[in-house]
Length: 196
Image 1 (cartoon, rainbow, N blue to C red):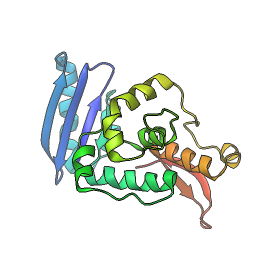
Image 2: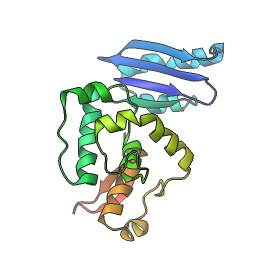
Image 3: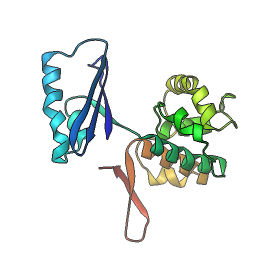
Image 4: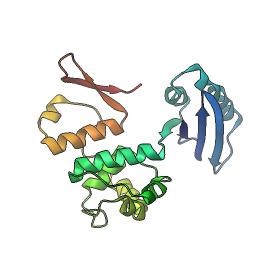
């Protein structure tokens, strides 16, 4: 399991990885060195993985945003699932696709934007090759877009105003914010909560 740690107070990023609960990767990609206090705070939390503590919360307590790095097969599975939602057919994965998608930073929000963008570079040209080719343009467009199309919290009233396509996009947006649907005994959604 790998995580990327970022913060406004740290100029760059830190990559950490764990295998069987033990730290096996610690990579600094910084433009300025950590001060003694920062290094001590990070070091105190590095050994927590074998205690089965939520690392994302542990690092957020000291102002670092921890993002789990997806494995290549998880990225392809997410791509295929969203491709089927937005295009309506199953995506046929080529052997080269895993190599192309391997180093891309992807989440549902990025793919949501890719599939819904009106930019001629992406529109109706949906493939992993096209995503890879125009990835930098996509990220730049997302950065320049500003506020998202949907609210960051769940609202039944808002959801009821959407058509089925809008609901799918709204749910993808909520999942990209780390939320999961909480359902009652009858299977009805009663809330979206932070996933643990």
